[in-house]
Length: 187
Image (tube, rainbow, N blue to C red):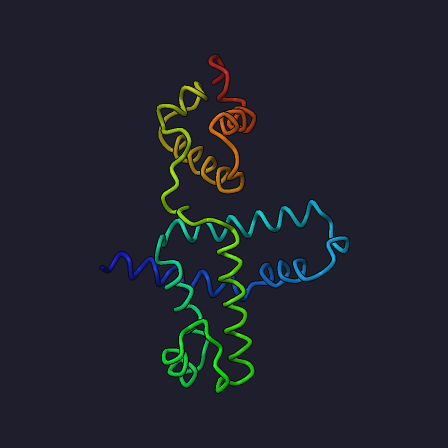
């Protein structure tokens, strides 16, 4: 199906960009070093930002995320390595690959394990705690149209960053985040 192929291709390009980003490199550096070398608040902010980026890619590509990640890896390998990779398996680092190709495969393998560790499976099916009608009950002064969509997008991102929170926690966050819409008389 053309739509799936388009989503997988777009996700593969986004994964490739992310795997090669300074953000990912910094995340690895923090993860591999003593935590006291870095500011704890900055570590959490960077981790949340990376988690959100990955989650948004997964939401767009859905169950096809591993295929997108494999395609991203294949795009980085030389043509000779691609043939070997197809024969051996994408996340298997066979000995015949040159040292640089082995590093690329290892980087993608580490990124795949990172994604699995985020426990985002099913994020592509995540529904917001409040639909448009329920959102207008929580935020009575919320205007219709684009404001509902923007608020729903913000709510989904909050849910991704706060996976253990409840609907009630989300309601409190919404009222704190959008106070001008929380009061029945504010406009």
